[in-house]
Image (cartoon, rainbow, N blue to C red; front, side):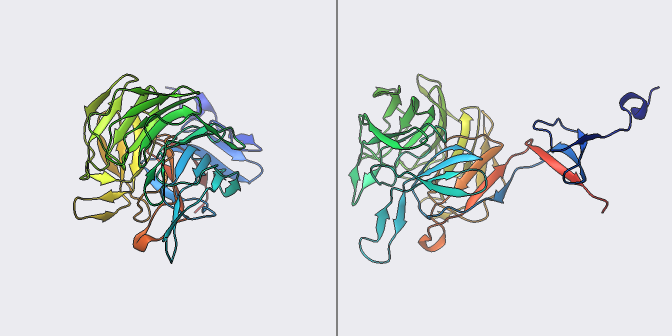
Amino acid sequence: MATYKEIFGTNIEVLASDPSNPVEGQVWYNSTDNVVKGASVTAAGSWATGGSLNTGRRAMGGAGTQTAALGISGNTNLPTPPFSLDIANTESYDGTSWTEVNDVNTARGYAARGSGGTQTSALYFGGRSPPATQLAITESWNGTSWTEVNDLNTARSTLAGAGADNTSMLAFGGKTPTITAVTEEWNGTSWTEVNDLNTAREQLSGFGIKTSALAFAGLTPSRTAITESWNGTSWTEVNDLNAVRSGAGAAGADNTAGLMFGGFEGDPVGGNVGKTELWNGTSWSEEADLSGPVYYQQQSGAGTATAAISFGGEGPSNQMRTATEEWLGAGAPLTRTFTDS
């Protein structure tokens, strides 16, 4: 019988830089770093620290991926009346650090969570201005600046959204000021009302694209664990979260796989949590927690179940967080460095 040595030989490939798409089990010598490396996959998901936002805030919008994200507008605390302030700041993340870029035209918090899109093509819609004016404003991002476009049909805040870019988006739920189930589709020019959620709610979370999305958690007005799946035409109730939640972050490419993290758990008594749940297309499972409890951070509405990002939000004692955390899920590619110890 042939041995491994006879079949594959004993030479290790010498490369000046790591391969861009190594396969599991591949080994090479990095001549620049002077170390032997190998490709593996993660056994379990975990969160790691990323670069901090320049401006801490909650109730902000987000778009993009773990290595190319946007943090949009939001709300921060003040020590004196009016005690809170909407800010227009937009920040761009390159996987290491955040950079301030052009502001939104209308500063506002509690707009669509998971407004979706990419770092160069995003949509930010809805929200509220103090003290409680519901907004229908929609703004489109072209990678450089924000432009006001056609409004939502139903002005609202604390809604959720999902979409691929600034030409294709879904808006659902929220507060008008009554809690609503209204769903609207964006075609790149205007919004059209389509089939409602089965359960009206605000402070819900969502991820996906216009034809394949997931809506979950929120206030009905009590906190809920209800999850609904969108097939491009209508919503269908599927398996619940493991715990009732509102104001949680989320990321996922479509309704078959995604992640929910943080939020406020419990009803009527509860508090901010760092818990993470993974959706596999059928059911939710509990995963590794964030580093600490956080409520109403961004949700990018993009990324994947193996590569997500969480940033900002409200921590203990109403602290406005600047923290960024990056999720590496089970089965994600991982490069390991071999040492003699």
